[in-house]
Length: 222
Length: 121
Image (cartoon, rainbow over all chains, first blue to last red):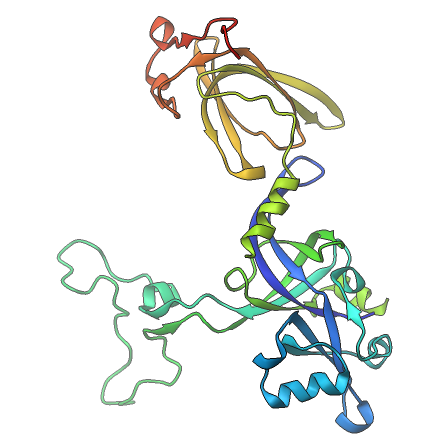
């Protein structure tokens, strides 16, 4: 049916595959999520479901959010995110329905996982853009991790927009594509995903079927 | 709070039947080896010189002298390929990492052996 769910990063560990090889995995607690709202193609001009995730005290909500949950008749949630679907996919959902990891994915599925990366603060170009910097020796004076030249001369007389310079790094929305589900624990709604996922443990993740993989497209047809 | 969930996951992946051993003990590790189609069990006997304790990712380094050459093998002890661990000889060691054995050979590389049957225990 659907093709996405909300989750929380639990952390990383390693598991063994059927050959006894160690595989690094990220543990993601995916669900249970509740369908808070269904977008109506007639009214909203597209198909989507809004999913709520993680229990929340009612007095912690803003009034506009509280109204959404009241209208849906579901207990308040901490996070509310929208997952776009095709018309067929949307048909399988109804407001108030609770979905878990198992309802959306199976082992071997490919995923795109979106989250907010760990904030790194103000960083130089060597860390931020993998510039090479300058030589550490041979008389280099206070110029070891500098970017070097950042432009030309009187012409063009400016620094081009988008020039890679020091600045704030991390803490931005990042999507990692084509992650494979290595194992799935339906009882606890845990996804074991091969490889790394953006952000710290405890961060909200939006988990969708991979857009660029053939397997993802095939899974979509189901 | 979420850390608890990770611990739980790791604990579930751990074997329960691994005998208790310490660095310095001589042990015998039975490991399944896949050679193309065939599968066999290889036994590696040596001294534990390191025990890395990290839940289901724990590993040990076992050292032995094979035909006059020092050989060390790292075993992820909770891996399904590690079938069995037997204790051959217990020893007493004052440190946790016995890297110093690498620089010693022959008689100097011996460890104090624990009595075969301690009175208590």
